[in-house]
Length: 91
Image 1 (cartoon, rainbow, N blue to C red):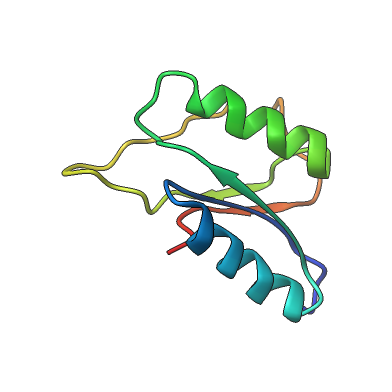
Image 2: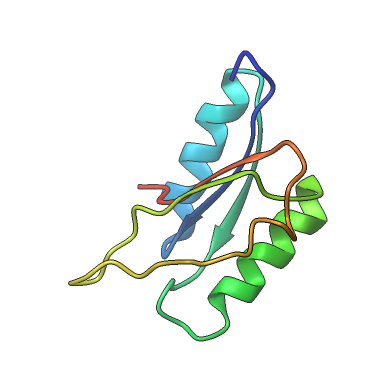
């Protein structure tokens, strides 16, 4: 977090996402929680919209969510680049 990371933490449960966000903020980073099910058809759009609204863009996505198999969140990198780091999986 020493480099000023902005992190959008996602989790299916509110509390783990908020805990991870608090840990980021304790290290002087910026964090916002995005609660939802990554398998929901609208999750990817909501996640990207939230990142754009909160941080202005996306540089990196770490997708570590799984529900029996891994679901990929694909974003055309040319559309959403600005200087933030997005990390998934609050718990």
